[in-house]
Amino acid sequence: MPTYTLIRNGLVVTEQGTFPFDILVCDHRIAAVGYRLNEGHADRTIDATGCMVLPGVVDPHVHIQLDTGIYRTDDDWAVGTRVAAFGGVTTVVDFATQFPGQDVREAVNARHEEVGDKAYVDYGLHVMLTELPADDQTLDRWMQDLVTLGTPAAKVYTTYRPNYYQDDDALLRVFRAAAAARVLVMVHAENDALVTAATQRLASAGKTDLRYHGQGRPPLAEIEAVHRVLFLARITGCPVYIVHCSTDEAVHLINTARQQGVTAFAETCPQYLLLDETAYEGPHPEWVIMQPPLRPPAMREGLWRHLQAGHIHTLGTDHCDYALSQKTATGNFTNTPGGIPGLETALPLMATYGVLRGPLTWKDLVRLMSTMPARCFGLYPRKGALVPGSDADIVLYDPRGTTRIRADALHGVSGYTPYEGMEVEGHVRLTMVRGQVVMEEGELRGPAGWGVFVPGRAASYPTS
View 1 (tube, rainbow, N blue to C red):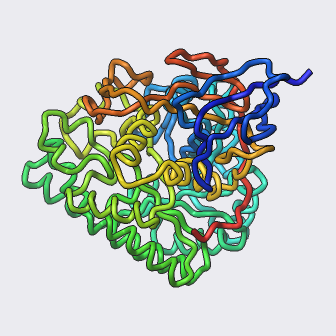
View 2 (view 1 turned 90 degrees about the vertical axis):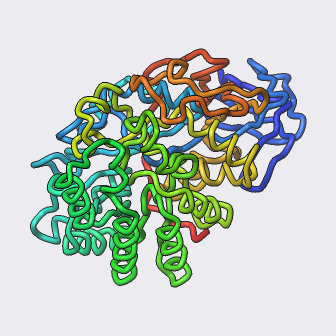
């Protein structure tokens, strides 16, 4: 017999706006959305009075159980997806890294084995290309494999020599093959030569304290690389997705390219909207070692203007749960692992500073954190939507009450948060994944293993 859950009395947020709707869930899917639905057949009724009823967050950029070949985070998929559940994230899209000697199929299969039966929320995968085949025919086949595997996005880097770096010829080969297969190419865009030179100059001057981290990766490194990537995308017809844009000029370049017909998307992260480079002079620079680094306040303000104008398409977290002991091991920015935790705090922070105290609407937040990530990576409308037939991935966000973020109240393993002490309004009251309540009122409901792989499709990419 099917099981029915009715969510009543909340304000449902969709792409179209905010409505006083009820939602009826039948087993794993949404059965109906509308006014005053009949609760006669409901096995459970959830009273959402005072809450915003949101589609579950789709985080398109996370690093759970990350192994770079140099550093490894201390979490696993049980920890990472537990953190997601407390943050209202119902789908994480992580990366299958291609380690030496692997093809893309082996990389994806290895990542699935790591996830196993640990996940509390659903997951998708991108594939991180690190070692290209010598011939273009094999590369073409790899791109077709990505589509077949349900992982139709490949990530490449213009920095991190020698393990991740792709030179311009490699980028061109990837873009041509991806364009033919309708694979979206994600790019970490920083000019490696500029980063290397800036870092070496600082090291030669003895300036290796963590506070110099931002100076080792100047804004121009991102801006130049984005400009070059967009040029290559234009001449190949390849759709590109620029991850974690930290400068307003990078977003301006992407928006201009889109106006000229390039299929390009801009992602930014809460850290680039809420923090700036002055944090490197504070008492805890280890909390904000990330790539790209935090930028000057004027660039942060420029990102907000682009966000409000609709020039930024998605918000990801770039979540990376390195332990505090790893971040403080050397005190040298050149060999400190980069990456910060963010899965649990992203929705409360953006609800607070984006909507309740900021220029966005709830509809904007749903577009940035649910709908557009799902569209970009071929998960929509199964994910990112509150419509009949979609997975019942639902979050109740209660905007009442003010608290402060504290690392000791979070559920990861890092032992710190860069947002320590920041005020947030409201909290995630309930997280539902495919009809199963996995977190409610601050308690993990589980079960572990409930999360499943959700294959993406080669998308017909949205133009807005």
